[in-house]
Length: 400
Image (cartoon, rainbow, N blue to C red; front, side, top):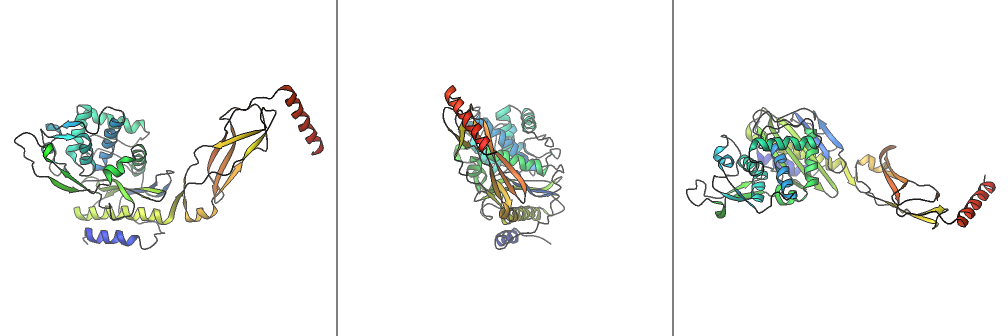
Protein backbone atom coordinates (compact mmCIF):
# COMPACT_ATOMS: atom_id res chain seq x y z
CA UNK A 1 0.00 0.00 0.00
CA UNK A 2 1.41 3.36 -1.00
CA UNK A 3 1.87 5.86 1.83
CA UNK A 4 1.51 9.50 0.80
CA UNK A 5 3.41 12.35 2.43
CA UNK A 6 0.04 13.94 3.21
CA UNK A 7 -1.06 10.89 5.19
CA UNK A 8 2.23 10.88 7.09
CA UNK A 9 1.92 14.54 8.00
CA UNK A 10 -1.66 13.91 9.11
CA UNK A 11 -0.42 11.05 11.30
CA UNK A 12 2.36 13.22 12.72
CA UNK A 13 -0.15 15.91 13.67
CA UNK A 14 -2.45 13.33 15.24
CA UNK A 15 0.37 11.97 17.39
CA UNK A 16 0.13 15.02 19.63
CA UNK A 17 -3.51 14.28 20.45
CA UNK A 18 -2.93 11.19 22.58
CA UNK A 19 -0.29 9.63 24.82
CA UNK A 20 2.02 7.01 23.34
CA UNK A 21 2.82 4.93 26.39
CA UNK A 22 3.64 1.74 24.50
CA UNK A 23 6.99 1.16 22.85
CA UNK A 24 6.85 1.87 19.11
CA UNK A 25 6.84 -0.96 16.59
CA UNK A 26 9.10 0.05 13.70
CA UNK A 27 9.82 -1.07 10.17
CA UNK A 28 13.37 0.29 10.48
CA UNK A 29 16.07 -2.36 10.76
CA UNK A 30 17.81 -0.42 13.53
CA UNK A 31 16.67 2.43 15.75
CA UNK A 32 17.30 4.26 18.99
CA UNK A 33 15.75 7.04 21.06
CA UNK A 34 18.47 8.83 22.99
CA UNK A 35 18.23 11.44 25.72
CA UNK A 36 20.50 14.39 25.00
CA UNK A 37 20.88 15.52 28.62
CA UNK A 38 21.82 12.26 30.32
CA UNK A 39 22.70 9.85 27.51
CA UNK A 40 19.94 7.54 28.65
CA UNK A 41 18.60 5.17 26.01
CA UNK A 42 14.80 5.35 26.07
CA UNK A 43 14.19 2.87 23.26
CA UNK A 44 16.36 0.70 21.05
CA UNK A 45 16.06 -1.87 18.30
CA UNK A 46 19.23 -3.55 16.97
CA UNK A 47 21.03 -0.33 17.89
CA UNK A 48 24.54 -1.80 17.46
CA UNK A 49 24.01 -3.13 13.94
CA UNK A 50 26.44 -1.46 11.46
CA UNK A 51 24.60 0.18 8.55
CA UNK A 52 25.67 2.60 5.83
CA UNK A 53 24.48 6.06 6.93
CA UNK A 54 24.14 7.51 3.41
CA UNK A 55 23.81 11.32 3.60
CA UNK A 56 23.79 11.24 7.39
CA UNK A 57 27.56 11.04 6.81
CA UNK A 58 27.35 14.78 6.11
CA UNK A 59 26.93 15.50 9.83
CA UNK A 60 30.55 14.44 10.34
CA UNK A 61 31.55 16.66 7.41
CA UNK A 62 29.61 19.54 8.99
CA UNK A 63 31.29 18.92 12.34
CA UNK A 64 34.71 19.38 10.77
CA UNK A 65 33.52 22.43 8.84
CA UNK A 66 32.18 24.12 11.97
CA UNK A 67 35.16 23.05 14.06
CA UNK A 68 37.43 24.74 11.52
CA UNK A 69 35.59 28.01 12.16
CA UNK A 70 35.87 27.56 15.93
CA UNK A 71 39.62 26.98 15.60
CA UNK A 72 40.06 30.09 13.46
CA UNK A 73 41.24 28.17 10.41
CA UNK A 74 38.27 29.31 8.34
CA UNK A 75 35.69 32.09 8.64
CA UNK A 76 31.98 32.14 7.99
CA UNK A 77 32.14 34.76 5.24
CA UNK A 78 35.31 33.67 3.47
CA UNK A 79 34.84 32.79 -0.18
CA UNK A 80 34.99 29.20 -1.39
CA UNK A 81 36.02 29.01 -5.06
CA UNK A 82 34.22 26.07 -6.64
CA UNK A 83 36.51 23.76 -8.61
CA UNK A 84 35.67 20.81 -10.81
CA UNK A 85 35.77 18.46 -7.78
CA UNK A 86 33.11 20.49 -6.00
CA UNK A 87 30.88 20.95 -9.01
CA UNK A 88 27.48 19.28 -9.16
CA UNK A 89 28.45 18.00 -12.62
CA UNK A 90 31.19 15.85 -11.05
CA UNK A 91 28.77 13.97 -8.79
CA UNK A 92 27.13 10.68 -9.83
CA UNK A 93 23.66 10.63 -11.37
CA UNK A 94 21.06 10.55 -8.61
CA UNK A 95 23.09 12.64 -6.18
CA UNK A 96 21.34 15.25 -4.05
CA UNK A 97 22.85 18.61 -4.99
CA UNK A 98 23.29 22.18 -3.84
CA UNK A 99 23.81 23.09 -7.54
CA UNK A 100 27.41 24.20 -7.38
CA UNK A 101 29.23 24.89 -10.63
CA UNK A 102 32.91 25.31 -11.38
CA UNK A 103 33.83 28.99 -11.22
CA UNK A 104 31.16 29.94 -8.68
CA UNK A 105 32.13 31.90 -5.57
CA UNK A 106 30.25 30.91 -2.43
CA UNK A 107 30.54 31.96 1.20
CA UNK A 108 31.78 29.28 3.57
CA UNK A 109 28.58 29.43 5.65
CA UNK A 110 26.43 28.95 2.54
CA UNK A 111 28.41 25.82 1.68
CA UNK A 112 27.52 24.51 5.14
CA UNK A 113 23.86 25.39 4.60
CA UNK A 114 23.82 23.71 1.21
CA UNK A 115 25.36 20.67 2.82
CA UNK A 116 22.83 20.49 5.66
CA UNK A 117 19.60 21.80 4.12
CA UNK A 118 19.90 20.74 0.47
CA UNK A 119 22.02 17.72 1.45
CA UNK A 120 24.35 18.63 -1.39
CA UNK A 121 26.89 15.97 -2.29
CA UNK A 122 28.63 18.67 -4.32
CA UNK A 123 28.83 20.85 -1.19
CA UNK A 124 30.48 17.99 0.71
CA UNK A 125 33.25 17.72 -1.87
CA UNK A 126 33.62 21.49 -2.18
CA UNK A 127 34.09 21.76 1.58
CA UNK A 128 36.45 18.78 1.72
CA UNK A 129 38.73 20.25 -0.95
CA UNK A 130 38.57 23.73 0.56
CA UNK A 131 39.59 22.51 4.01
CA UNK A 132 41.98 19.64 3.28
CA UNK A 133 42.97 20.05 -0.35
CA UNK A 134 41.49 16.70 -1.34
CA UNK A 135 38.60 14.46 -0.40
CA UNK A 136 41.06 11.67 0.48
CA UNK A 137 42.79 13.78 3.13
CA UNK A 138 39.45 15.06 4.39
CA UNK A 139 38.12 11.52 4.85
CA UNK A 140 41.22 10.73 6.90
CA UNK A 141 40.29 13.68 9.10
CA UNK A 142 36.72 12.38 9.40
CA UNK A 143 37.89 8.99 10.62
CA UNK A 144 40.41 10.59 12.96
CA UNK A 145 37.65 12.77 14.43
CA UNK A 146 35.24 9.95 15.25
CA UNK A 147 38.03 7.77 16.62
CA UNK A 148 39.28 10.61 18.84
CA UNK A 149 35.74 10.97 20.20
CA UNK A 150 35.70 7.29 21.11
CA UNK A 151 33.50 5.88 18.33
CA UNK A 152 34.76 2.45 17.33
CA UNK A 153 32.10 1.37 14.83
CA UNK A 154 32.09 4.50 12.68
CA UNK A 155 34.03 4.38 9.42
CA UNK A 156 33.91 6.57 6.31
CA UNK A 157 35.21 6.44 2.75
CA UNK A 158 33.77 9.70 1.42
CA UNK A 159 32.49 13.05 2.74
CA UNK A 160 28.94 12.78 1.35
CA UNK A 161 27.74 9.25 2.20
CA UNK A 162 27.49 7.92 -1.37
CA UNK A 163 29.65 4.88 -0.59
CA UNK A 164 27.94 1.79 0.81
CA UNK A 165 31.18 1.06 2.70
CA UNK A 166 30.56 3.88 5.15
CA UNK A 167 29.42 2.48 8.51
CA UNK A 168 27.65 3.71 11.63
CA UNK A 169 25.44 2.22 14.31
CA UNK A 170 22.29 3.87 15.60
CA UNK A 171 23.77 4.03 19.11
CA UNK A 172 27.03 5.67 18.12
CA UNK A 173 25.37 8.01 15.66
CA UNK A 174 22.92 9.23 18.31
CA UNK A 175 25.85 9.84 20.64
CA UNK A 176 27.71 11.69 17.90
CA UNK A 177 24.63 13.80 17.17
CA UNK A 178 24.57 14.77 20.85
CA UNK A 179 28.27 15.69 20.65
CA UNK A 180 27.53 17.79 17.58
CA UNK A 181 24.64 19.66 19.22
CA UNK A 182 26.60 20.20 22.43
CA UNK A 183 29.64 21.51 20.53
CA UNK A 184 27.75 23.69 18.04
CA UNK A 185 24.36 24.52 19.61
CA UNK A 186 23.89 27.53 17.32
CA UNK A 187 23.90 25.25 14.27
CA UNK A 188 20.39 23.99 15.03
CA UNK A 189 18.74 27.40 14.77
CA UNK A 190 21.01 28.86 12.12
CA UNK A 191 21.34 25.87 9.79
CA UNK A 192 19.39 22.70 10.53
CA UNK A 193 16.02 24.22 11.42
CA UNK A 194 15.84 26.27 8.20
CA UNK A 195 13.07 24.81 6.04
CA UNK A 196 14.37 26.17 2.73
CA UNK A 197 17.62 27.16 1.04
CA UNK A 198 17.72 29.07 -2.25
CA UNK A 199 20.76 28.80 -4.51
CA UNK A 200 22.52 30.11 -6.58
CA UNK A 201 22.23 33.86 -6.14
CA UNK A 202 23.54 36.40 -8.61
CA UNK A 203 26.70 37.00 -6.59
CA UNK A 204 27.56 33.29 -6.81
CA UNK A 205 27.62 33.04 -10.59
CA UNK A 206 30.89 32.82 -12.56
CA UNK A 207 31.75 35.78 -14.83
CA UNK A 208 30.57 34.08 -18.02
CA UNK A 209 29.37 30.83 -19.47
CA UNK A 210 27.35 29.63 -16.49
CA UNK A 211 25.20 26.54 -16.98
CA UNK A 212 23.28 27.07 -13.73
CA UNK A 213 21.76 30.55 -13.57
CA UNK A 214 18.27 30.15 -12.12
CA UNK A 215 17.96 30.11 -8.31
CA UNK A 216 16.19 27.04 -6.95
CA UNK A 217 14.38 27.03 -3.62
CA UNK A 218 15.06 23.63 -2.09
CA UNK A 219 13.09 22.27 0.86
CA UNK A 220 14.99 20.81 3.79
CA UNK A 221 15.03 17.01 3.52
CA UNK A 222 13.86 16.96 7.17
CA UNK A 223 10.11 17.13 6.58
CA UNK A 224 9.36 17.07 10.31
CA UNK A 225 10.39 20.74 10.58
CA UNK A 226 7.30 22.78 11.36
CA UNK A 227 5.21 19.59 11.63
CA UNK A 228 6.35 18.06 14.93
CA UNK A 229 6.59 20.35 17.95
CA UNK A 230 10.17 21.19 18.87
CA UNK A 231 11.94 19.53 15.93
CA UNK A 232 14.98 21.61 14.91
CA UNK A 233 17.24 19.05 13.17
CA UNK A 234 19.02 16.96 12.09
CA UNK A 235 19.87 14.86 8.96
CA UNK A 236 18.38 12.37 6.53
CA UNK A 237 20.00 9.82 4.23
CA UNK A 238 19.30 7.32 1.50
CA UNK A 239 21.21 4.98 -0.78
CA UNK A 240 19.93 1.71 -2.24
CA UNK A 241 22.28 -0.41 -0.14
CA UNK A 242 21.23 0.99 3.23
CA UNK A 243 17.66 2.06 2.58
CA UNK A 244 16.13 5.14 4.19
CA UNK A 245 17.73 6.69 7.28
CA UNK A 246 16.77 9.63 9.46
CA UNK A 247 18.19 11.29 12.56
CA UNK A 248 15.83 13.81 14.15
CA UNK A 249 16.03 15.88 17.31
CA UNK A 250 13.41 17.90 19.17
CA UNK A 251 13.33 20.01 22.32
CA UNK A 252 10.31 20.70 24.51
CA UNK A 253 10.88 22.48 27.77
CA UNK A 254 14.04 21.06 29.34
CA UNK A 255 13.79 17.77 27.41
CA UNK A 256 15.71 17.13 24.20
CA UNK A 257 15.61 13.73 22.53
CA UNK A 258 17.45 12.34 19.51
CA UNK A 259 15.91 9.62 17.36
CA UNK A 260 17.80 7.54 14.81
CA UNK A 261 16.14 5.14 12.36
CA UNK A 262 18.27 3.16 9.91
CA UNK A 263 17.65 0.63 7.18
CA UNK A 264 14.07 1.13 5.99
CA UNK A 265 14.20 -1.08 2.90
CA UNK A 266 12.03 -2.82 0.30
CA UNK A 267 9.77 0.19 -0.15
CA UNK A 268 9.37 2.70 -2.94
CA UNK A 269 11.28 5.98 -2.83
CA UNK A 270 8.36 8.14 -1.71
CA UNK A 271 7.14 5.52 0.74
CA UNK A 272 10.61 5.37 2.26
CA UNK A 273 10.72 9.14 2.77
CA UNK A 274 7.30 9.01 4.39
CA UNK A 275 7.99 6.01 6.62
CA UNK A 276 11.31 7.31 7.98
CA UNK A 277 9.60 10.59 8.93
CA UNK A 278 6.64 8.83 10.54
CA UNK A 279 8.84 6.45 12.56
CA UNK A 280 11.12 9.29 13.67
CA UNK A 281 8.08 11.28 14.80
CA UNK A 282 6.69 8.23 16.60
CA UNK A 283 9.93 7.75 18.53
CA UNK A 284 10.08 11.40 19.55
CA UNK A 285 6.46 11.46 20.67
CA UNK A 286 7.02 8.28 22.65
CA UNK A 287 9.86 10.02 24.46
CA UNK A 288 7.95 13.19 25.26
CA UNK A 289 4.87 11.24 26.34
CA UNK A 290 6.72 9.01 28.77
CA UNK A 291 9.82 10.87 29.97
CA UNK A 292 10.67 14.26 31.37
CA UNK A 293 14.00 15.97 31.98
CA UNK A 294 14.32 17.85 35.24
CA UNK A 295 17.09 19.96 36.74
CA UNK A 296 16.85 19.79 40.56
CA UNK A 297 17.35 23.01 42.47
CA UNK A 298 20.25 23.34 44.88
CA UNK A 299 19.31 22.40 48.47
CA UNK A 300 19.79 24.76 51.37
CA UNK A 301 23.30 23.86 52.51
CA UNK A 302 23.96 26.12 55.49
CA UNK A 303 27.40 26.00 57.09
CA UNK A 304 29.29 23.23 58.89
CA UNK A 305 30.67 23.84 62.43
CA UNK A 306 34.47 23.95 62.38
CA UNK A 307 36.66 22.96 65.32
CA UNK A 308 40.16 24.27 65.95
CA UNK A 309 40.00 26.74 63.06
CA UNK A 310 40.51 30.44 62.75
CA UNK A 311 36.79 30.65 61.97
CA UNK A 312 34.09 28.51 63.59
CA UNK A 313 31.98 27.62 60.53
CA UNK A 314 32.75 26.44 57.02
CA UNK A 315 30.92 27.72 53.95
CA UNK A 316 30.19 24.90 51.51
CA UNK A 317 29.04 24.77 47.88
CA UNK A 318 27.82 22.44 45.14
CA UNK A 319 28.98 22.67 41.54
CA UNK A 320 26.91 21.59 38.57
CA UNK A 321 23.86 19.65 39.71
CA UNK A 322 23.04 17.48 36.69
CA UNK A 323 19.73 17.01 34.95
CA UNK A 324 17.83 13.73 35.12
CA UNK A 325 15.50 12.25 32.54
CA UNK A 326 12.88 10.19 34.30
CA UNK A 327 9.85 8.13 33.45
CA UNK A 328 6.55 9.24 34.94
CA UNK A 329 6.80 6.44 37.53
CA UNK A 330 10.34 7.47 38.47
CA UNK A 331 9.18 11.05 38.93
CA UNK A 332 6.90 9.93 41.77
CA UNK A 333 9.77 8.37 43.75
CA UNK A 334 12.52 10.83 42.86
CA UNK A 335 14.34 12.20 45.89
CA UNK A 336 17.66 13.66 46.99
CA UNK A 337 19.62 12.99 50.17
CA UNK A 338 22.13 15.40 51.64
CA UNK A 339 25.09 13.69 53.28
CA UNK A 340 27.16 16.09 55.39
CA UNK A 341 29.28 15.68 58.52
CA UNK A 342 27.94 17.27 61.69
CA UNK A 343 31.29 18.98 62.26
CA UNK A 344 34.82 19.23 60.84
CA UNK A 345 38.29 19.90 62.20
CA UNK A 346 40.70 22.46 60.73
CA UNK A 347 42.73 22.82 58.64
CA UNK A 348 40.73 22.50 55.45
CA UNK A 349 41.46 23.75 51.95
CA UNK A 350 39.13 25.35 49.47
CA UNK A 351 37.88 22.67 47.08
CA UNK A 352 38.17 19.78 49.55
CA UNK A 353 35.21 17.40 49.28
CA UNK A 354 33.23 17.43 52.51
CA UNK A 355 29.99 15.66 51.57
CA UNK A 356 27.67 14.44 48.86
CA UNK A 357 24.19 14.95 47.46
CA UNK A 358 22.68 11.66 46.29
CA UNK A 359 19.75 11.37 43.87
CA UNK A 360 17.51 8.30 43.81
CA UNK A 361 14.36 6.95 42.16
CA UNK A 362 12.74 3.59 42.89
CA UNK A 363 15.51 3.02 45.48
CA UNK A 364 18.00 3.13 42.61
CA UNK A 365 20.90 5.54 42.76
CA UNK A 366 20.82 7.91 39.80
CA UNK A 367 23.79 10.09 40.61
CA UNK A 368 26.01 11.54 43.30
CA UNK A 369 27.19 15.16 43.38
CA UNK A 370 30.13 16.22 45.54
CA UNK A 371 29.91 19.07 48.03
CA UNK A 372 33.07 21.15 48.47
CA UNK A 373 34.60 23.61 50.91
CA UNK A 374 34.05 27.08 49.49
CA UNK A 375 36.95 28.50 51.49
CA UNK A 376 40.17 27.54 53.22
CA UNK A 377 40.33 27.57 57.01
CA UNK A 378 43.69 27.46 58.74
CA UNK A 379 44.44 25.99 62.14
CA UNK A 380 43.75 28.43 64.99
CA UNK A 381 46.39 29.53 67.51
CA UNK A 382 47.46 27.08 70.20
CA UNK A 383 45.18 28.54 72.86
CA UNK A 384 42.00 28.18 70.78
CA UNK A 385 43.03 24.68 69.68
CA UNK A 386 43.57 23.60 73.30
CA UNK A 387 40.28 25.12 74.38
CA UNK A 388 38.39 23.30 71.59
CA UNK A 389 40.07 20.01 72.54
CA UNK A 390 38.96 20.48 76.15
CA UNK A 391 35.39 21.29 75.12
CA UNK A 392 35.19 18.30 72.78
CA UNK A 393 36.60 15.96 75.41
CA UNK A 394 34.11 17.23 77.97
CA UNK A 395 31.24 16.61 75.52
CA UNK A 396 32.39 13.05 75.00
CA UNK A 397 32.48 12.43 78.72
CA UNK A 398 29.09 13.96 79.41
CA UNK A 399 27.39 12.55 76.30
CA UNK A 400 28.83 9.05 75.90
